[in-house]
Length: 416
Ligand SMILES: *Cc1c(COP(=O)(O)O)cnc(C)c1O
Image (cartoon, rainbow, N blue to C red; front, side, top):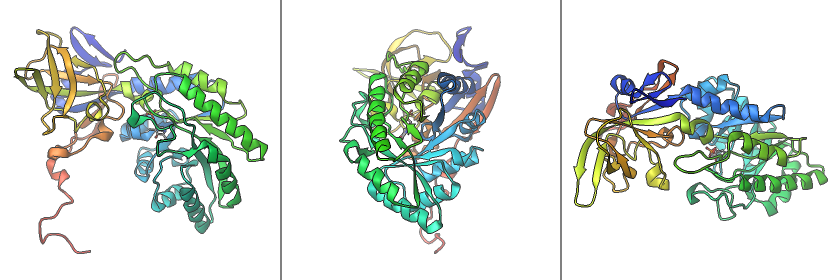
């Protein structure tokens, strides 16, 4: 539907990618509003009449235009920093729908989120709990709290994005959870709102998530036995997408699995990021040079690990499509200009590519731009959101001057 070929030219919705490159240059992130909306609506439809809240995980892609698209559909938000909280507000989202996760929330972040009246703090340690209680008490506020428990299940994903094992830094061990909830109940500035878990990202099987939900349900039953009542159960995010030959459960099956495991008394909260925006984005890039070495052929393009770090960081696979089909295929490594041998975007791909050709790295809507860096003094790329035949500039390409705008030569700094 949204990324497709027509007359051997790659389109996103009604717009040829080549025309985006003409107008906005490369590298450039291109997002499809239709795909984002269709994924979000699939979640909502799957829950049907079941009481639920979909909190879009802002960290997957926090561009204001994307948050705006989702806010208009009535999403809630999951954040991991005060910066993301401000983004939600700047995009017209309701900060009072926000769930705040993360192991290292600072005092300033807790204060800001309390003042904003967010829906829930997903607390990940005793010390955080105590600080939150203190900050809320000093303001005469009551903080809504869920304890993020670590259910110790193997999410069977890349180790860097597995979060639900006892060896990970995330959450509070299941064995300690009862005690921590008793602590929550003892603070008059805290209110038990729910229980939370999040076992990892790019999950391609249903079992680990259902397994985690069962363990959380068991905890909730024990809590009820002590008259500690939660209102919601937050199962986190993590549903994977098909980058190559993975076959993750469909959104419907995933939601059904969760609904069948969680008692109908409780509101179900989920925090999807990748499964909403991942397949909605492509990174558009232009091949600069083809370079033959005795061992390999390199297609050196103008995108690099600075724009898309997933291949270097997670050995991730992204499909690469020619923007205009034609020419003879050869096996190439697609690399960028950055001075690192880890700077590759794809390896050993059959691709017809000559210098000057445009390529599209697919499934870059999540953990793409948000993980971009300025290494090698590379300005971050433009982002555009396609809506039918319209091209909306969602973010201007950075300029080199912006990169050093806050820097001072010797003697220039204003003393503070
Ligand atoms: C990263 C994260 C998410 C989103 O994960 P996806 O794999 O993008 O769905 C949700 N909740 C928490 C707590 C996270 O850290």
